[in-house]
Image (cartoon, rainbow, N blue to C red; front, side, top):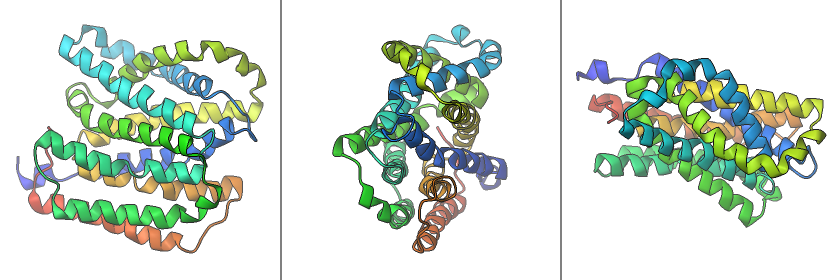
Length: 304
Protein backbone atom coordinates (compact mmCIF):
# COMPACT_ATOMS: atom_id res chain seq x y z
CA UNK A 1 0.00 0.00 0.00
CA UNK A 2 1.39 3.41 -0.95
CA UNK A 3 1.51 6.32 1.41
CA UNK A 4 -1.21 8.22 -0.46
CA UNK A 5 -3.54 5.23 -0.43
CA UNK A 6 -2.92 4.68 3.25
CA UNK A 7 -3.69 8.20 4.46
CA UNK A 8 -7.02 8.76 6.20
CA UNK A 9 -9.73 10.16 3.92
CA UNK A 10 -11.97 13.03 4.86
CA UNK A 11 -15.04 10.82 5.07
CA UNK A 12 -13.44 8.61 7.72
CA UNK A 13 -12.40 11.61 9.79
CA UNK A 14 -15.87 13.16 9.43
CA UNK A 15 -17.53 9.90 10.47
CA UNK A 16 -15.39 9.72 13.61
CA UNK A 17 -16.23 13.33 14.39
CA UNK A 18 -19.97 12.71 13.95
CA UNK A 19 -19.86 9.73 16.31
CA UNK A 20 -17.98 11.73 18.92
CA UNK A 21 -20.45 14.62 18.60
CA UNK A 22 -23.38 12.34 19.33
CA UNK A 23 -21.65 10.34 22.05
CA UNK A 24 -20.52 13.52 23.77
CA UNK A 25 -24.13 14.42 24.52
CA UNK A 26 -24.94 10.95 25.91
CA UNK A 27 -23.67 11.56 29.50
CA UNK A 28 -26.03 14.52 29.79
CA UNK A 29 -29.06 12.60 28.52
CA UNK A 30 -28.22 9.47 30.47
CA UNK A 31 -27.66 11.37 33.69
CA UNK A 32 -31.06 13.04 33.26
CA UNK A 33 -32.75 9.67 32.77
CA UNK A 34 -31.16 7.65 35.59
CA UNK A 35 -30.25 10.21 38.27
CA UNK A 36 -32.46 10.23 41.38
CA UNK A 37 -33.42 13.86 40.72
CA UNK A 38 -34.45 13.20 37.12
CA UNK A 39 -36.49 10.41 35.55
CA UNK A 40 -34.81 7.90 37.89
CA UNK A 41 -35.20 5.03 35.43
CA UNK A 42 -33.56 1.68 36.24
CA UNK A 43 -30.28 1.61 34.25
CA UNK A 44 -30.92 -1.88 32.88
CA UNK A 45 -34.31 -0.76 31.56
CA UNK A 46 -32.86 2.31 29.88
CA UNK A 47 -30.11 0.35 28.13
CA UNK A 48 -32.54 -2.36 27.02
CA UNK A 49 -35.00 0.20 25.59
CA UNK A 50 -32.21 1.90 23.65
CA UNK A 51 -30.98 -1.37 22.17
CA UNK A 52 -34.44 -2.73 21.32
CA UNK A 53 -35.35 0.49 19.49
CA UNK A 54 -32.02 0.38 17.68
CA UNK A 55 -32.51 -3.26 16.71
CA UNK A 56 -35.92 -2.51 15.20
CA UNK A 57 -34.49 0.39 13.20
CA UNK A 58 -31.56 -1.73 11.98
CA UNK A 59 -33.68 -4.81 11.19
CA UNK A 60 -33.66 -4.28 7.38
CA UNK A 61 -29.88 -4.02 7.49
CA UNK A 62 -29.66 -7.14 9.64
CA UNK A 63 -31.82 -9.16 7.23
CA UNK A 64 -29.67 -8.04 4.32
CA UNK A 65 -26.43 -8.83 6.16
CA UNK A 66 -27.59 -12.37 7.09
CA UNK A 67 -25.01 -12.84 9.91
CA UNK A 68 -26.43 -16.29 10.65
CA UNK A 69 -24.83 -17.37 7.36
CA UNK A 70 -21.39 -16.01 8.25
CA UNK A 71 -18.51 -18.44 8.88
CA UNK A 72 -18.29 -19.73 12.44
CA UNK A 73 -15.18 -17.71 13.18
CA UNK A 74 -16.93 -14.50 12.15
CA UNK A 75 -19.98 -15.40 14.24
CA UNK A 76 -17.79 -15.82 17.30
CA UNK A 77 -16.06 -12.51 16.61
CA UNK A 78 -19.45 -10.81 16.20
CA UNK A 79 -20.61 -12.25 19.52
CA UNK A 80 -17.42 -11.07 21.21
CA UNK A 81 -17.80 -7.61 19.67
CA UNK A 82 -21.41 -7.40 20.86
CA UNK A 83 -20.38 -8.45 24.34
CA UNK A 84 -17.67 -5.80 24.50
CA UNK A 85 -19.21 -2.87 22.62
CA UNK A 86 -22.95 -3.24 23.31
CA UNK A 87 -23.33 -5.01 26.65
CA UNK A 88 -19.87 -4.40 28.08
CA UNK A 89 -19.89 -0.68 27.37
CA UNK A 90 -23.49 0.51 27.69
CA UNK A 91 -24.54 -1.36 30.82
CA UNK A 92 -21.60 -0.46 33.11
CA UNK A 93 -21.54 3.18 32.00
CA UNK A 94 -25.29 3.57 32.56
CA UNK A 95 -25.06 1.88 35.95
CA UNK A 96 -22.21 4.21 36.86
CA UNK A 97 -24.12 7.35 35.94
CA UNK A 98 -26.68 6.75 38.67
CA UNK A 99 -23.97 8.09 41.00
CA UNK A 100 -21.26 9.62 38.80
CA UNK A 101 -21.85 13.10 37.38
CA UNK A 102 -21.94 13.75 33.64
CA UNK A 103 -18.63 15.64 33.78
CA UNK A 104 -16.77 12.89 35.60
CA UNK A 105 -18.31 10.31 33.27
CA UNK A 106 -17.01 12.28 30.29
CA UNK A 107 -13.54 12.35 31.83
CA UNK A 108 -13.49 8.61 32.41
CA UNK A 109 -14.76 7.87 28.90
CA UNK A 110 -12.05 10.13 27.52
CA UNK A 111 -9.39 7.76 28.84
CA UNK A 112 -10.47 5.27 26.16
CA UNK A 113 -7.75 6.41 23.69
CA UNK A 114 -5.12 5.32 26.21
CA UNK A 115 -6.60 1.82 26.35
CA UNK A 116 -7.03 1.72 22.57
CA UNK A 117 -3.40 2.76 22.16
CA UNK A 118 -2.28 -0.03 24.49
CA UNK A 119 -4.52 -2.72 22.99
CA UNK A 120 -3.68 -1.68 19.44
CA UNK A 121 0.03 -1.95 20.15
CA UNK A 122 -0.46 -5.38 21.71
CA UNK A 123 -2.39 -6.51 18.65
CA UNK A 124 0.33 -5.25 16.33
CA UNK A 125 3.02 -6.59 18.69
CA UNK A 126 4.80 -3.26 18.77
CA UNK A 127 5.50 -0.52 21.29
CA UNK A 128 3.59 2.79 21.05
CA UNK A 129 5.72 5.42 19.36
CA UNK A 130 6.80 8.53 21.28
CA UNK A 131 4.48 10.61 19.04
CA UNK A 132 1.50 8.42 19.89
CA UNK A 133 2.27 8.66 23.60
CA UNK A 134 2.65 12.45 23.38
CA UNK A 135 -0.63 12.71 21.47
CA UNK A 136 -2.49 10.60 24.03
CA UNK A 137 -1.03 12.48 27.00
CA UNK A 138 -1.76 15.84 25.39
CA UNK A 139 -5.35 14.85 24.83
CA UNK A 140 -5.69 13.55 28.36
CA UNK A 141 -4.26 16.83 29.69
CA UNK A 142 -6.95 18.68 27.77
CA UNK A 143 -9.61 16.39 29.16
CA UNK A 144 -8.47 16.98 32.73
CA UNK A 145 -8.52 20.76 32.19
CA UNK A 146 -11.94 20.52 30.59
CA UNK A 147 -13.80 18.68 33.32
CA UNK A 148 -11.76 19.58 36.41
CA UNK A 149 -14.42 22.01 37.73
CA UNK A 150 -17.02 19.25 37.73
CA UNK A 151 -15.13 17.41 40.47
CA UNK A 152 -17.12 19.48 42.95
CA UNK A 153 -19.94 17.06 42.24
CA UNK A 154 -17.77 13.94 42.04
CA UNK A 155 -19.81 10.76 42.14
CA UNK A 156 -19.09 7.74 44.29
CA UNK A 157 -16.13 5.48 43.68
CA UNK A 158 -18.45 2.65 42.74
CA UNK A 159 -20.08 4.70 39.99
CA UNK A 160 -16.72 5.77 38.58
CA UNK A 161 -15.50 2.17 38.67
CA UNK A 162 -18.49 1.07 36.58
CA UNK A 163 -17.75 3.78 34.01
CA UNK A 164 -14.07 2.79 33.89
CA UNK A 165 -15.07 -0.80 33.18
CA UNK A 166 -17.31 0.26 30.33
CA UNK A 167 -14.60 2.50 28.88
CA UNK A 168 -12.12 -0.38 28.80
CA UNK A 169 -14.62 -2.72 27.13
CA UNK A 170 -15.37 -0.14 24.46
CA UNK A 171 -11.65 0.31 23.78
CA UNK A 172 -11.30 -3.43 23.28
CA UNK A 173 -14.31 -3.40 20.97
CA UNK A 174 -12.76 -0.67 18.80
CA UNK A 175 -9.77 -2.95 18.18
CA UNK A 176 -11.55 -6.32 17.95
CA UNK A 177 -14.31 -5.26 15.54
CA UNK A 178 -12.04 -3.96 12.77
CA UNK A 179 -11.72 -7.23 10.76
CA UNK A 180 -15.50 -7.68 10.69
CA UNK A 181 -16.12 -4.12 9.52
CA UNK A 182 -13.51 -4.45 6.80
CA UNK A 183 -15.11 -7.68 5.59
CA UNK A 184 -18.85 -6.95 5.88
CA UNK A 185 -19.14 -3.18 6.20
CA UNK A 186 -20.05 -0.84 9.03
CA UNK A 187 -23.83 -1.08 8.69
CA UNK A 188 -23.91 -4.90 8.68
CA UNK A 189 -21.63 -5.16 11.71
CA UNK A 190 -23.51 -2.46 13.62
CA UNK A 191 -26.86 -4.17 13.00
CA UNK A 192 -25.43 -7.55 13.98
CA UNK A 193 -23.72 -6.48 17.18
CA UNK A 194 -26.65 -4.34 18.35
CA UNK A 195 -29.15 -7.16 17.75
CA UNK A 196 -26.94 -9.71 19.53
CA UNK A 197 -26.34 -7.42 22.46
CA UNK A 198 -29.99 -6.44 22.85
CA UNK A 199 -31.02 -10.00 23.76
CA UNK A 200 -29.15 -10.37 27.09
CA UNK A 201 -29.88 -6.73 27.94
CA UNK A 202 -33.61 -7.28 27.42
CA UNK A 203 -33.55 -10.36 29.63
CA UNK A 204 -31.77 -8.40 32.37
CA UNK A 205 -34.36 -5.62 32.15
CA UNK A 206 -37.46 -7.83 32.50
CA UNK A 207 -37.63 -7.45 36.31
CA UNK A 208 -37.55 -3.66 35.86
CA UNK A 209 -40.19 -3.50 33.11
CA UNK A 210 -42.68 -1.86 35.48
CA UNK A 211 -40.48 1.24 35.38
CA UNK A 212 -41.78 2.06 31.90
CA UNK A 213 -45.00 3.33 33.48
CA UNK A 214 -43.23 6.38 34.93
CA UNK A 215 -41.45 7.51 31.76
CA UNK A 216 -42.52 11.06 30.96
CA UNK A 217 -42.93 12.53 27.50
CA UNK A 218 -39.57 14.28 27.69
CA UNK A 219 -37.96 11.10 28.99
CA UNK A 220 -39.35 9.11 26.07
CA UNK A 221 -37.98 11.70 23.65
CA UNK A 222 -34.51 11.55 25.20
CA UNK A 223 -34.54 7.74 25.04
CA UNK A 224 -35.50 7.90 21.37
CA UNK A 225 -32.74 10.39 20.62
CA UNK A 226 -30.19 8.27 22.48
CA UNK A 227 -31.26 5.16 20.56
CA UNK A 228 -31.39 6.68 17.09
CA UNK A 229 -28.53 9.12 17.47
CA UNK A 230 -25.91 7.65 19.75
CA UNK A 231 -26.65 3.98 19.15
CA UNK A 232 -27.64 3.70 15.48
CA UNK A 233 -26.13 6.68 13.65
CA UNK A 234 -23.05 7.02 15.84
CA UNK A 235 -22.30 3.28 15.78
CA UNK A 236 -22.54 3.21 11.99
CA UNK A 237 -20.29 6.25 11.71
CA UNK A 238 -17.74 4.92 14.23
CA UNK A 239 -17.51 1.47 12.68
CA UNK A 240 -16.99 3.08 9.29
CA UNK A 241 -14.25 5.28 10.71
CA UNK A 242 -12.32 2.59 12.61
CA UNK A 243 -12.26 0.40 9.51
CA UNK A 244 -10.22 3.09 7.72
CA UNK A 245 -8.26 4.66 10.56
CA UNK A 246 -5.64 3.02 12.79
CA UNK A 247 -6.53 2.55 16.43
CA UNK A 248 -4.27 5.34 17.74
CA UNK A 249 -5.84 7.92 15.40
CA UNK A 250 -9.47 6.90 15.86
CA UNK A 251 -8.82 6.78 19.58
CA UNK A 252 -7.69 10.41 19.64
CA UNK A 253 -11.13 11.50 18.45
CA UNK A 254 -12.67 10.21 21.67
CA UNK A 255 -10.95 13.06 23.50
CA UNK A 256 -13.61 15.31 21.97
CA UNK A 257 -16.39 13.61 23.95
CA UNK A 258 -15.95 15.70 27.13
CA UNK A 259 -15.84 18.91 25.07
CA UNK A 260 -19.22 18.07 23.56
CA UNK A 261 -20.47 17.03 26.99
CA UNK A 262 -19.51 20.37 28.53
CA UNK A 263 -21.15 22.35 25.71
CA UNK A 264 -24.30 20.22 25.81
CA UNK A 265 -24.47 20.57 29.58
CA UNK A 266 -24.13 24.34 29.26
CA UNK A 267 -26.81 24.65 26.57
CA UNK A 268 -29.29 22.06 27.83
CA UNK A 269 -28.73 22.05 31.58
CA UNK A 270 -27.39 25.60 32.12
CA UNK A 271 -24.09 24.29 33.48
CA UNK A 272 -21.22 26.75 33.82
CA UNK A 273 -18.87 27.21 30.84
CA UNK A 274 -15.35 27.62 32.21
CA UNK A 275 -12.58 29.71 30.66
CA UNK A 276 -10.10 26.82 30.85
CA UNK A 277 -12.19 25.11 28.15
CA UNK A 278 -10.20 26.93 25.49
CA UNK A 279 -6.91 25.67 26.89
CA UNK A 280 -8.38 22.16 26.87
CA UNK A 281 -9.39 22.53 23.23
CA UNK A 282 -5.79 23.42 22.40
CA UNK A 283 -4.41 20.31 24.06
CA UNK A 284 -7.03 18.08 22.42
CA UNK A 285 -6.39 19.59 18.97
CA UNK A 286 -2.64 19.14 19.43
CA UNK A 287 -3.12 15.50 20.37
CA UNK A 288 -5.18 14.91 17.24
CA UNK A 289 -2.60 16.68 15.06
CA UNK A 290 0.34 14.73 16.48
CA UNK A 291 -1.42 11.43 15.84
CA UNK A 292 -2.41 12.33 12.27
CA UNK A 293 0.96 13.86 11.42
CA UNK A 294 2.88 10.84 12.68
CA UNK A 295 0.70 8.41 10.73
CA UNK A 296 0.94 10.40 7.51
CA UNK A 297 4.72 10.63 7.75
CA UNK A 298 4.90 6.90 8.23
CA UNK A 299 2.60 6.20 5.29
CA UNK A 300 0.98 3.26 7.05
CA UNK A 301 -2.69 3.15 7.84
CA UNK A 302 -3.33 -0.54 7.71
CA UNK A 303 -5.65 -1.77 10.43
CA UNK A 304 -4.95 -5.43 10.62
